[in-house]
Length: 505
Image (cartoon, one colour):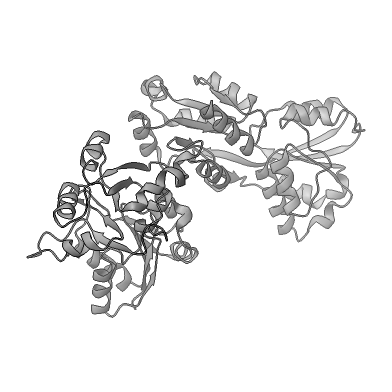
């Protein structure tokens, strides 16, 4: 019994421009066959069990020919799989989606099309170039800059293009730029017509070069611009100087490694990306719930005996409430208990479960929690402390010194995540990374453990290091890193703001 194929437009590169339906298809897919221009971040929405197959084409280097891609899609769908064919931009705008659909119809395989935002529109918009404007032009034409070389003659009417008076957008035309500019001038377009090339539009690697039909070839050669690029020809290019916005953001062009566990990395990635950074997710740790839940289950069943419940992380909150639910209970079982959270993120997570924190210290570290308890009558009180294995002992030790009876329970532990080590090390060797971020001591130690010991000094040479707070910074220093940025407020927001301030200064 055959499956079904969804041709999904991945958008131009910024994963935020992918459609909701496209992401839903990726999440439900058994097989994802993706292109070179499709953002790799979109693959994180796929199931852990999904088969991911790269079928990209880069500058003439084809992993698979188009016929082989067609055959692969048919093969996977014929085996009963739900297949997502993830294509950069829009499947039908010079994306050869029509050829893939013809292969599916020939084998009676059902399909759906999920359109995507085409780079022909998005890249100019991110470069500050409106393709139409009432005072400049009322038409826009999309043209391939790379016609099928096997065609007997060109299907492009250059004379008509030169005389439209509208905006021209060429896709995949960098190598043919001299021919494109020459043909337009030959056919009557003035040599001072503005031109812009946008490379890797909508991504942190975006690079825009402007000029005229007369100067653009020299300007592009000087900048060393290579595919993939969009070429925009027309007077609207003049508007870029007052309309460019994407390239003005504080972290534009910076490549930053995020080492946080993948499940927790999304907020940080979004904040840094919104400020213009290209985030490379290498989650060096993974949060794992302890296999033996006996102790925490016993604590949940004996909640009436506790006076305080203290959380030192978002993970602790999640694990505790999972066990509370497993016991058939909810926040009503905590009505008599006072609570403390190490910081606002932990307090917010508690609030989402319907629990308000009575204590949230101004400084988000264990010492501050201890200080916050100084004016509380905790002597003889019983405190439940569900937290990570290997956490610093200061909190239970100091609370016990105040006379409290502390029941510390290991709710979870962090383990090394080595799935993408190869890509991480290669990026460090190529010196294409600007910064690595550490959000906990465990991200530091696990990050270092992934690097070859004999290459460590060379790999981190010139690498800017950012730490979420003093404890993490101290761990980084002890492991041979020089910390350049340390957040004053020990939160993800605080770290992201400190990074922006660092690059801004």
